Image 1 (cartoon, helix red, strand yellow):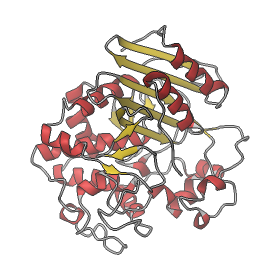
Image 2 (spheres, one colour; image 1 turned 180 degrees about the vertical axis):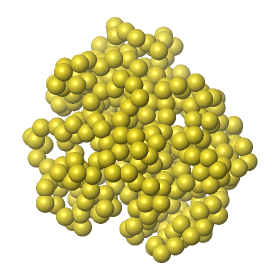
Image 3 (tube, rainbow, N blue to C red; image 1 turned 45 degrees about the vertical axis):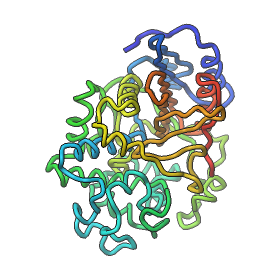
Amino acid sequence: MTNVESTGRPKVREAMDRAVSELGAPSVVVQIQDGDGTWYGSTGQADTVSGARRVPGEHLHTGSISKAFTAATVLQLEAEGLLDIDDTVERWLPGAMDGSDYDGTKITVRQLLSNTSGLFATGMAKEVQRRYNVRSSFDEHRFEVFQPGAVLELAVSEPPAYQPGEAFWYSNGGFGFAAAIVEKATGNSFESELDRTLARPLGLSHTFARHREETGYRGRHPRAYSKVFLREGVRPDEVTPENWPSMLEDPALPPFDVTEVNTSAGWGAANVVSTLDELLVFFAAMIEGSLLPPAQHEKMWTTVSTEGAHWLANTRYGLGLYELTLSNGLKLRGGTGQSYGTCTFVMGTPDGSHMLAVHTNNDWATFPLLDSILEAEFGASGLVLKI
């Protein structure tokens, strides 16, 4: 692990400084690994009250980067012969989708992990909107615990976006089902299986899936600041994937400290904590195929189009992670995780020899911020949220 600020990379430094001065990010940290070794840089404040700076090795809530860990755990279990990713949900969780608009006999584990199951976007669920997407209600509900059954019920609480296998549609709920299948196939907790199959083999001593009751971190961490809330008074049934940007609160409002929050609603989808160092190790292993057996590595990187899904342009989705094509034609592999007050981004070349990891302790204007750093390091842009 690097423990000092690095010199050089003036374009990356400039992009980081603009993120703070022009986009209002409280802080940005970047870590890069290539043939010249490891580069680390930071700017801004980890804590806007105390003025504390960012430091290497901080614990970070990785948001949807957790999906890559869940997919890799499942693929490790497949390699061990404990399951097959073409098994159906019904095979492992009989009756789990009964009473909903979904048919567990037609949805496979592979479809859960590739976001092609047809499950709706869980973040748009009326119950999620009611509890978390307005400042006042977020503060009221931020420490509530979701049991696994409640996570699965939430995942099927709205009508399907598509039929299984028909198209890509980003859904946290599919990864909750995947976590439940891990537990059923092994008889162990999802958290312990992620540790056994991934963290320990890769030496990731600071990477873990939060237990259900956890609301914080196990080491030094930055504060997390959010401004991506809906306006007070917006009704959940008014919000759609198409109109939610127009429903957001006044951007001039001060950021809201959301550091301590229970992430059990994102079980399997957004509940992993890690560090930039360890994320680089994990993603390099996923990209270059040094952990998963060849058959499972190929399945992880068999991708589907994300076109038309109100998601990231220029991407194709694998199992829990994605490929990004930059404007100069360069293809990168990695993942993005944004949650309340935190955004994490890891990308690398297909051979894993040139890796970039970014974290910012806010959740607004993040994609322009990330794209500018991407362009500074790789010479071209391409990361665009296409709403």
